[in-house]
Length: 143
Image (cartoon, rainbow, N blue to C red):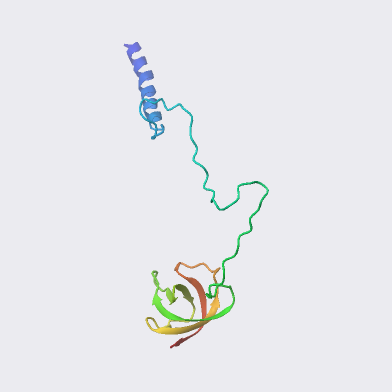
């Protein structure tokens, strides 16, 4: 009787361990293939337009001017329409395909009508609004 109990104590943990380890197998291995062959490594995601020869360096070319103000701390004047942002209390000025998150300016910024906003770009500021380039408002006028 003790021998049967002793075997059960050895066999059950071994079976449980084998079952757990079978879950660690490679799901792409075909059943019965053994799975012990060589592994293939996918090529790294190196863009084809970059040189792969060591010793050569490539200097990135800055994009051309877009006419959209992006420089931090620079006063700008933007014409567009202000709408409520996706987060409560956020106001976003849309000027063409560019969006600006309006900071400051109080609650008197009209929404849904064409406006001219003067302010200073502040792209480094963190905000829960997460929409548009932050623009610290100094003046808002209806157009």
